Amino acid sequence: MLVRELLPLFEDVTTILEVSESGKALQEQLRAPEEAAYRPYVPGEKMDSGTVVVAFLGPNPATHIDAATVAPALQELPLGGRALLLLGWPVADLPYHGVLDELINAGCQVLQVIPLDNAVGHRAHCAVLAARVDRLAPLRPYLADEPVVVDGDAPDLRALLRLTGEKVFSDLLDRPLRRKLAEAEDRVSEQDEHIKQLEKDLAARDATIAKAETRLARARNDIAKLQASTTFRVGTTIVQGARRPGKAIVSVPVGLVRIWRKRGVTGGTTDRPA
Image (cartoon, rainbow, N blue to C red; front, side, top):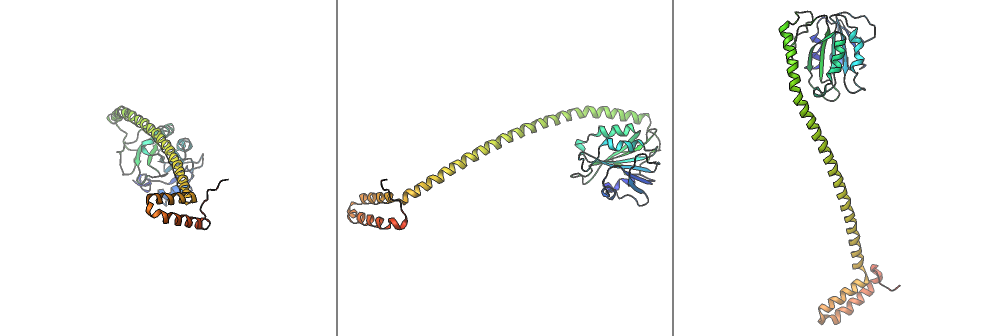
């Protein structure tokens, strides 16, 4: 369901009081009907059964409010008054106990909790429909989309027995899920530590490689200087002459003369005694 489809679930809405200070953002998302007055909540304001209190609760103080902030408005709702609470927590992380406590303290019954589409970032992930009652209102199916009825027939004993029974069984089923979640979180923590250690090892290896590359560059530079030196070239000429004695009589003197002439031109290093 979309946010704009929530208010139509309440009939005979005359006034919408927003507790969260969103400017016009929440009003535009809800697409409040033109015939209903939309304004900020003021403590002590008189309300009637056509009033709907709206608020955006969640974990981000810059965008959301907490349950305690909306509590005074809920407590001032008259019988038949309703509340529409958008919740900014992901459903899996929803701390519903705090919200439920404030609703119960205000004499409000949770009529329906609706998951919302396009729930990303700081948007609402689900919405709570509630009403101020003096007796239990009719129960609603999980994804009911017909208008909310507050003053219909109250649930009979069989419905209440089913509710309490489902609560007990749901608690039983939740326990192993919570245990698995805790175990998964422990494994994630271990993996995080392992990844951090691997990153440290990788950084150390990168540093070692960088040092080795520096030494290699220096060695290559030293070799280049050595090969350019006069001593090296003279030695090379003599070695080549020794390998070919027949040509050495001519090649060695010619090579030495050539080295001597190019010594000052090429900037070759001359190994002279200090």
